[in-house]
Amino acid sequence: MPFPQNIYATWEKVEKQVRDIDRENHCMIIQDKGKQAVLSVVKTFDLSHCLFYIPVRAYWNWSQSAEHTAITELVTVIFAYLHQIVAIPFYAESGSFMDYQYDTLEQWVSETGDEGMNDEEDKAWRQQQEDTLYELRRAGGHIMPVIKNPDWLVKMDSVVTGYHHRDKHELEWELLAIEFLQLYRQYPKRSLADGIHEDLVYPDEEERITMCEYTGFYWSDKDCFKHELLEMVNCSFQERPVMDEPTAIYSFDTLPDPNRKDFDFETRLFDLIERLRDLLNDYDHEER
Image (cartoon, rainbow, N blue to C red; front, top):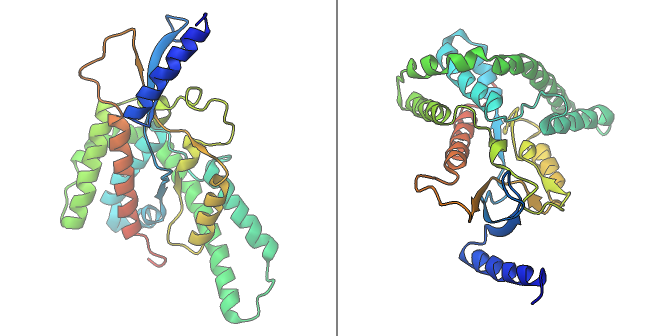
């Protein structure tokens, strides 16, 4: 075949063989810093459309009690690491995905007013919604500057190593914090966005779920808006066929690194986030 059809035809064959090995692989001819064209395999980390949201209400309740100073500090350094280094967005940040969801809920409650409120039970439910919105806004305004404070990252080592469990529940927190600290030590500047290259995989797809949308801090998974919030998120995502997932790039003009571990950071991080979420949910109650 004449040039450049011969290049394209050969690439098609290689691409099929690469995808047959692993459907998460994409064979591409890309441009890097040194060459105009490099044959590469881009491997994606399959998130299976999972969402990685971290509830904060349990932490907020702990922070209001002098009896829970130790666990409050432990969770604070974890939150500070996730927000400042990993770049997990906080719901009180103006313009964030979760901020928009809560703004929408607030508008919905405000516009509905007392419409259809015929008995005391309905009015009590509306009052609970208004109280929840007030509390999550107030708490968010206090929590955000705390976890943005770089001093907590400086103290992360001493806070984690200085925490000693007294029962099996506190042991779970201690082990979780140690693993977060180990991840931070091994990848001190690594954010989740560092491994995402949206220009490589489905670059022409405009409707995509971004990292700042499928990760984030939010108020609670057990409050009066839990069903509405989930439905709003699902509605926002259901029309988007592509999710920005972490990628690993192999170029065929260099020898592979035998010590390279693909997605080591992401695998450990997402597992820790899920464990953190589950522990926080265990302590998240409507009433203190």
